[in-house]
Image (tube, rainbow, N blue to C red):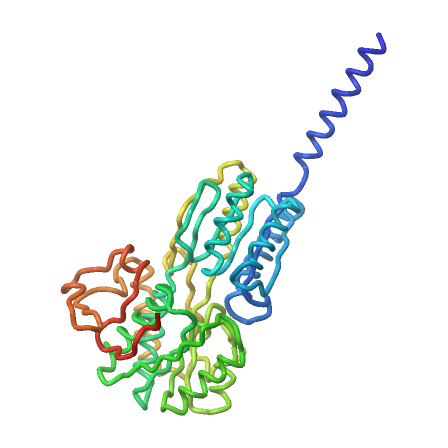
Amino acid sequence: MTLKTILAGAALAAGLAGAAAAQDDPVTVGFVYVGPVGDGGWTYEHNQGRLAVEEHFGDAVETVFVESVPEGPDAVRVMQQMALNGADLIFTTSFGYMDQTIEVAEQFPDVKFEHATGYKRADNVSTYSARFYEGRAIQGHIAGSITESNIIGYIASFPIPEVIRGINSAYIHAKKVNPDVEFRIVWAYTWFDPAKEAEAATALIEQGADVILQHTDSTAPQAAAAEAGGVYTFGQASDMAEFAPMPRVSSIIDNWAPYYIDRVQAVIDGTWESQDVWHGIGEGMVGIGEITDAVPAEVKAEAEALRDSIAAGEYHPFTGPLNRADGSAWLAEGEVADDGTLLGMDFYVEGITAEIPQ
């Protein structure tokens, strides 16, 4: 055997060893969070999904995350750093990361990106969201049934379609069971700020609201309601069960774990493709937390029946007749809203007298 043959064999062996090592390298999955993992709501549940990925895949997957990333230029830096550090897949988990996700995805075409609640896609960018408005319908039914003041407070984050859909869905179903119900809406202009959320809850309680709904992420509204006494609340994004049975009487729970596991598996299998997913109660992405005994048994049974009919596809929360707030016709009797209108929703339904901020 010549020296040349020996060297060639050694090089081949080294190459094969390197290839085997590369195949054994774990897939790296990054998560960019708008709030802290301990927020008790939105980010908490996304992080539960990340932990589920780790448990499911073990050593085959490594996860990294950065919490409390502002929606803006700093998000670009965080995503770029994750990509440069070898992330194969990055989940960006807030609507306000949309443009930043597209920007960084163009810079790193070999990295896969998944953006939560947005609508801009690319060959290496998928979008995913949950039909939270289905859960809002159930909350609205309960809220309209249990209010004694007929004033329901709603703490809203930002005037985007996702939030407007939720307000409308809750109002429609509160109004169905209680024609005298009135919604008071406070825009907090934050996803997570316990001080602002507590202030908003207190302001609504002072205006006579005895039920508080929220589309913000902390448990501060629950604490404010508990301090006031006699005020009902609902957990947002996670169960917030530490405030049960009062003031928190039920919750919307975001279950991201199955989706995260599925998309990581697609990267491992080499089958990942850009897609748009919008799942709800039926698919298990939206869960309804336990309805406590603070809610009358009859109302609880009605709410559970509503949940089941939505899950089965037998009922859609936006079913006519429905008009817009300006009185113009929207949906005729029995007509169901199309997804395009819901995804771009920028109007209130008839009966809500507040203005949508611009």
